[in-house]
Image (cartoon, rainbow, N blue to C red):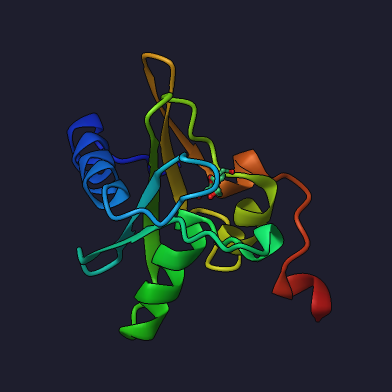
Length: 134
Ligand code: THU
């Protein structure tokens, strides 16, 4: 298990909080920010992007991971997720999206006052992954 030192996890959450200010969430008014830490120490951020066709909304986690891939960084160490209610565990779809990048990716979020770190495998046991496809 390779959780981050709390100080680093908090720093990543701060980045997630900062980027949440750029949210495009005129329908839910629920800003979310995500900050991805790549293996080489790069931090890549994203926020949720909503749409008038509600179902097309993209979560912050997926925007951030897409941005990391787009700059050539697919070795993902951790992802921090921020929302103002401090209950920002990633949604089910995002868990599936995160585990694509490895079962040991560390997910960081607040659960009330508690800073939580869990591997994505802990958040999504028995996941369907590329290994299952042989
Ligand atoms: N949202 C995220 O960005 N990440 C999640 O893991 C859960 C939900 C966004 C989607 C939508 O814009 C808003 O939060 C309300 O669901």
